[in-house]
Structures are given as C-alpha cells and as structure tokens.
Length: 393
Image (cartoon, rainbow, N blue to C red):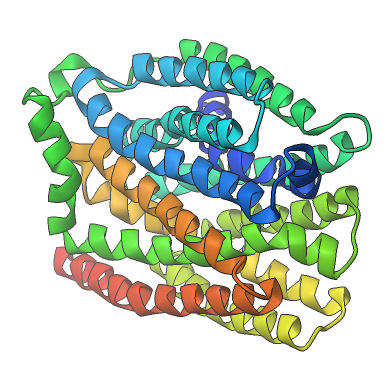
C-alpha cells in the first residue's frame, strides 16, 4: 500500500477547492456588486454561471491534453493563467467584462479540478483511491468553510476587489506548490494517438455503464448543491436579514459538514453503503429543507436541515468519484474531465433556475428535483457495482 503524502494531499485538496473558491468566495458581496456595477442582481448572479461554464469547458479541454502531454506542465500553466485572470478582474469596468473574465478564471481553475483527480488516479486505485479522495475532500471541505467566512470578514474592511486580490495570491501560491509535484504520468503511459483520438475518449468513456451512472448520479447531487449555493446569498441576507459576515458563518458551517460527510464515508466497510444511504438521506433532507422554506420556518429549524443535506452530499462524493475514475484508468484525464465538467454543467443549469420568480419557492423545487434524480441513478449504480464485486469472488 502506497504511503499518502501530506504535502500531496493538501496540495491536491486545495487544487480541487477551485470550484468552491470560484463560486463561494464572493457570495457575501453579490448584493453590493449589483450597486457597484449599476446592474441587476440577476446579472451579478450570471457571474456564477460564467465561472461554472469556464470550469466545465476547461476540464473538457485540459483532461484529454493531460493524457497525451502529462499532468504537471498543464497544471502549472493553468495556475499561472488563473493568477493573471484574477489580476485583470480587479480592473473590470462593467459587469460584462467582469463576467467574461470570470469565464477565463473558470477555464484556468478547471486545471486544478481535473488534474488533481487524474493525478490521484495515477497514484492509487480501489479502496485506497476512495480513501485518498475522501482525504482530499476533507481538505477541500476547508475551502468552502473559509471562503464565505473570509469573504464576509473582508466585507468590513474592503470591497469586492479585496476578495479577488486574495484569489490572486492563492493562484500564485498554488502555482509554486504545483512546481513541487512530481509528474505522475510518465511518457510511456501517455496516449500516443493524435489529439482527435484523445478528445474522442470524452465520448468513449460513456460506453462504460458504471462510469455513466456514477457521473449522472453525482451530477444530480451537484444540481441540488448548486441550487443551494446560488440561492443562499439572497435567502439568508434578504429573506432572513443576516449581515454579510453572519451569512458567511452560516454558509461556512454548512460547508464544514460536507467535509465531515466525506470523512464519514471512510468509516463504512463497503463504500457502496455510503453512496446508497448518502443519496437517500440527501432526498430526505432536501424535502425537509423545502418544507422549511415554503412554510417560512425560523432559521433555527432550517439550518439543521441544511446540515443534514450537506453531510449526505459529502458522503456520496468520494465513492462516486472513485467508481467513475477506477472504471476508466486508461483514460483518466478524459474521464476526470467529463466527470468534473458534468458537475459544473449542473451548476450552470441550477443557478438561473433558482433566481426565477420567488427564490424561496424556486430553490426549494430545484433542490428536491436534483435530490430525487440523484436517488434514481444511484440505486442502479450501487446494484451494478455490487453485482460486479460478487462476480469477482
């Protein structure tokens, strides 16, 4: 069994945190940004979609390239581009330029997401891969905890530009850390076919039923999760009247329980158990959240339901990811690209839906729909994996 390096775990965990940092860090500033750019809240909310589109497209572009050219150079290049995009965002004259640069920021940040999973798959397999991904998930869980809390704290001493200045520094630090990582895909193991074949693998991975089911199941869980993320600034600050800092604390507390859920996943003897019950619990918690929102329950009742949902969401992620990646070891870059991109496609779809009409009602409906679809695809996935395990002995 290979020794798990603390430096590699922390570095890859922080690289996977680009999703939360790009989507969560400036959430407390969104109402303020609408005034700064003299635009509507929906136009500012579109910056979330812009970032998630970049994260999705970037993974599709970078994943197959890493199968052909290796992981390290692309990773360092992505971190440098992320830093440059973060710098340019500070000088955005209007919301159109800001949202455009958010796409670029997402494209670059996608390198951290797709390559961290590919590097992990290069190094580990089976149960150890699932455990390593759970450790990465726990490290990653710190990011969404810190992001809104730091953002909320910064709201008292700076404007939204201070948030992106911090992202600039983060990009530089991770570029330096990436330089210290070793190349995990030696030339002998790289795809030797042309780029066309490499990108064709993006579609070929769907011929594997386990990969398809796990990808769609986790995509549905992210549809539910991003509905919560997109609605939360307006729900907590406008409906419940919390300050930016108080919102950051509530959001961060919920995010902490995602990390707890990923750690709980390692306590199950059979990984499928965590995946199956994580999806069922997510549906139950989503129904409780929806009921609380629609009935205008006090925040003290709503928060425990959100915590329940976050734990359930966290329990699913390491196992779902490990099943998908283990099924496509020969095309890890392409598989990681499709798997990761699908999550942000779900986010890009969910974000505008929750801002249509009454955010309390629309977000409740979207959260329940995502959780219900997640169960629909998770149960046959667990059955397929169990059948395969039994056939092996």
